[in-house]
Image 1: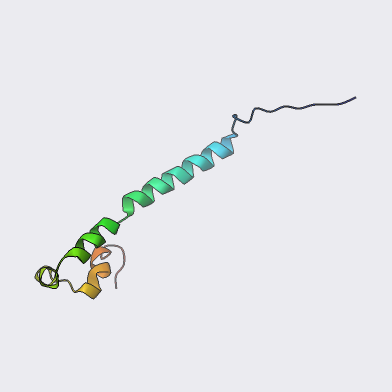
Image 2: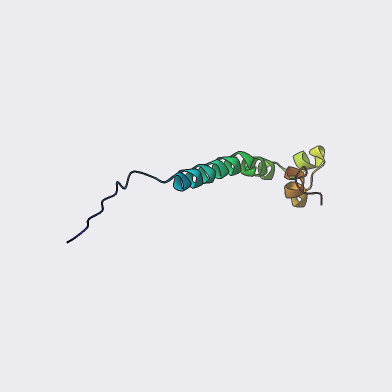
Length: 71
């Protein structure tokens, strides 16, 4: 006698759904937290413009992340 069990591959377990939701939420959070565009804008400025803002070229990262890291 043979037993055959079939499962629907489209049906996801509750754990799988929760994990998928968590991963998507984290990805969205990280995209919102990205500051790459701010860094690129500051790097495109001249040294004179940066000096007028009180930023050195070496200090761009510290300036952009000043609220996150207390360096």
